[in-house]
Image: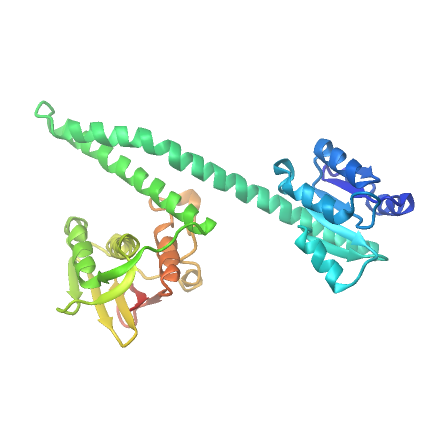
Length: 352
């Protein structure tokens, strides 16, 4: 027998028997014949789905629905109202009370079973997503403190005059690895803020020319390590936009770092900034292998890693965050493979 649990709530015992006949052998069942009983049974039975009648003496189905939804222990329970009331206003009242669906008596057994299966899948997906979100939040916040200690002591070791060359290289490796992990933690926290809808843009008048120059300067070491040429073309004058300085700087840095990462040694990365009457367009081109056609539509999805088992480095968060930031500003981010030469170009558009 499937362990999914369904609570049937109806003051009419015949209706309860009919629902039991449809569902028995497929799910674990419990019943209640009043609103008060329904709340008591639900608290102990912890159902996945509640099939809830509306017209009951004392506490009606709407009130039961509201109270079930207010119970944190039942936050994922799905409630399907089952009623002879078929007016639109009555269905809307049910949805307003927190019901997930509404089915009108008399109904076809196949329709009821189909709805139950759909909402069981939905409940399971929501629970999994909440668990992943909680784990990511826990990991992110609990990792910051020990990481800061690791980075701090690694920096102290690098400044020591008592270490030989090999020991200094090891300390530097600790520092770089710790910084990569801290970078991942910070990006994960930012992603969760976006997904929850908590991240707001702190808009102010920015000179994007200065931000771009600072981002290019910050990328020079990584480019030099791969013997890459950083070609840059942007206006000599100031280019202003209403934007969030921290988020836009983060986006530009991510795009430049991404271009450096995928460009071969002795290649080049090209950075262009232009403007039209309404928008500022930043183009960043690499000289890498380009993006497979089937991945172009997925490149901005979080954790966009094609082969996790053979994955080397990178976590697929940066481009996803750039997409969230572009959307937050009413802008756009796209990627296209270059025509007639290797690599691809990212177009980051910001409204003025």
